[in-house]
Length: 365
Image (cartoon, rainbow, N blue to C red; front, side, top):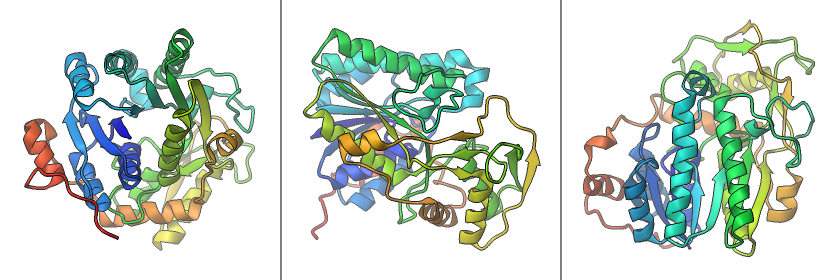
């Protein structure tokens, strides 16, 4: 199948592209590299033993994006591209609505023009807002509490209305929880720019010595150790969920919604202890005040994905931490800096695929 992946150089995108390539799909990536690096795709190509199409395009550039879809003629699209920092979204809400919502509108128009109406959308558990109804079901009322979450909710509603108006569309809204971990090779993983917004990459940077201590926001919740509990899911399990959804959509239409999570949570202190144990290094932390809007616990009910998709998370916290630490040790400063905007399309392609610019062929078993 020809699959176009927006944001395919990012953390979840790169792991999904790798699984798509290994499964025999032809993949084209659209990415503007605003918070990712072409180096991730170069390593994906190395791991997969086969090439990937690549275009440095912003979803807000409607003309170029439509041209790329008309050229590649995808049979399906997996849509990761978008801004994702909650704090930044509060400070710059219009930037988030413009990039996430308007960008998705442009993508849908381009898909329609290319007669591709199969879409896997990267949604988020943030659409459940501050719900304390646990575990979180796909039917749990939605109520986002920040601009980032509201962009995901608006897009979900937009996709629902689109599918209701045109039965040719087949759409999956994947609401996933807290992606962590890395590919077992240590070659690709999460490379946050600046100060990490999420717990695990922050803990990992403390363990490697890049940061002094982890801030634990509150230790007086009604949980086993008083710290917040979240549902962490290995990025490889998450990528597999996207491929399972893609397969399901081949024989389905309308909008389908699935939670992708483990169904259980780990506390902040459990994550810190796991990193200290796996790394063999101290992970200092200090308790600070709770953050507004944080709930005590949040974890998925993943049964619908198991029944519909035959999918379930296979990796536990220990494996998540081991793989994340392996990535951090091999890449203490993340991916090497590369200003992709200074590369013309052919140079970018040559960088990802090798100096010849030719697609690599799959390696023989």
